[in-house]
Length: 375
Image (tube, rainbow, N blue to C red; front, side, top):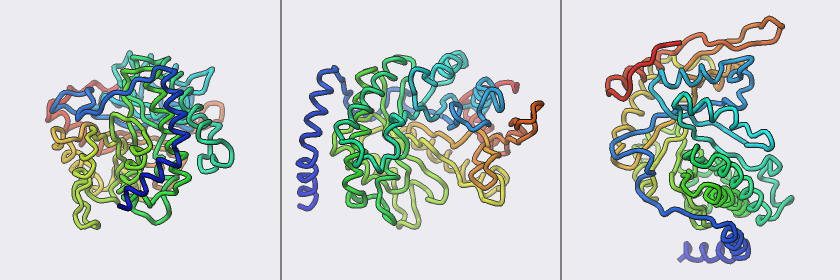
């Protein structure tokens, strides 16, 4: 009964907003694909191996003039045995950053999985209720997403909506599995953003797939709220790190199987970010326990390839040595700082970490790919 009352209140609260959205979407011929158990991007039994990076804003590490070039990045991804690359993009006109990465990725045979951020003017999202009404938020996100998806129609197959929108909507100290764990006003804002993006992408490229991501843990209450607010998506993307435990058997939650819970949404499950948290006093990749956890768990996720799980994206490709605490060492590839000829810092690859080779070796044993020669 409580659930029905809450749903009724949400419907009443957003009736005018939703009606306006429907009219706006109808005018632009939005086509929404029906849900299915497969994204259509891989055949049954196949799997997507991908990695995260910051090629369009990597604070020097990922830049052509100071860091590791796109060609080197793509080479490392392919050498590892992966074929997909996830990254952030704002797609600010008139200089759409995707112009710099789409053509070389196509040439290298790398598939791109951009996380499309809303227009920059909407930041910070938590203050949006005092600056724009939700109709305006929806329209801005719709137009932005339609323009970008239309420009890259057929060339980018999957778009990720924003990045961890549940993180600024959830109330403090909540698990996130219940609808009441989220701030109602911010739920409305998130719904306006995500629905605008999803509808806009489908308007710009009806064949493109859309993924809804969360910051992980038990935040499926956020997914429930977004579905109730009419957000259409093809793929459910989940972010997961070692301190959360094993996603199919969370010991601190009485061995709860989150994967089984997520299957109820009837969407392919992608692990959009996956790794262990580097220790503050130790660079990632040098702890045998952490290495063993990562390798063992991605092997287990691969075993679910016929049972809902379709992709794993490791976070991330390169270290950020400018960040000297643990968060600077998520990379599977080590990077160090050195002085350049002009006195400014440059970033150079120092090594492929042990976990890089362990993943590579395992994928080779599966005959997933043939090792590429190192550059």
